[in-house]
Image 1 (cartoon, one colour):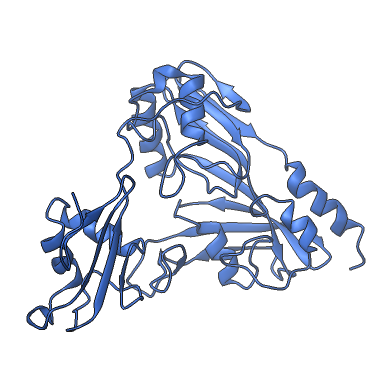
Image 2 (cartoon, rainbow, N blue to C red; image 1 turned 180 degrees about the vertical axis):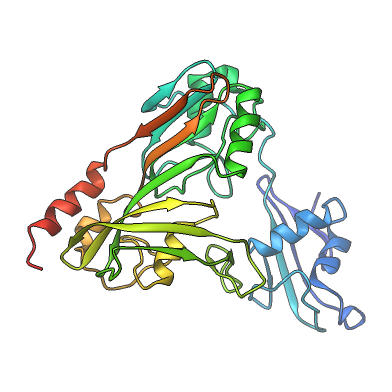
Length: 327
């Protein structure tokens, strides 16, 4: 496709672009409908996804899909190419904690993305697992082979994958009925007053930012429940154990921030000032959150599996520093 007149898509090897002013006759048209007329090959769902992910602006600002356009406003849209339907295996070393013919549990390092997504297509855990266990191809989905649940890029620890379809179906069903127990440790800012507690607050997408989640108003969002207890009190910080009853995106990070104690190193939900030095935070390679425990019933043998991962060095060096600091 070659560049055309106003509002005609232009295409580069990497993406398609649309840039045009809204005509007077188009005033009042929904943004997604306006884009649909110029990008007829895209589904309404894809267009909505582009708007929500920040690939579309109106007069330089992000807007919702249902925004009613005004005459003379300038709409710009970038349509990145869809990722390939299959995932290429990558021979990346994995820290395998448990493995048999049906299940693989890996201790993921901070900085590794679980599966391909926007802005990250290589170096993922999924690609490394596919190279480790080629039979996983096609289990669950072509772009997320074997992935039963995920960890954020900046979070380290135990993550479970299925090597067979029957294991995948059983494990995802177990997650849905909350039969898989996931235990985390995190270092949070400040002194948490209660020795233990429960945060039961729904989580939804933050309407002001496409990269943040937030506590949702009553009646909106998805129910999210996190149980926590104090493991250790330190100078200006608290080490917590958190147990998930649900598994929402950024759940622990949002919940502890909502009670005034964001996770150390969390630039998305955290504070500008920290009890931890900037050099130590930089060495985290993510956030001070680690998936330390995973318990489930084996999907084929029925044997209970209980796995643990020690606090990694990236967090341990901060704990050692704080233990030597005056309180």
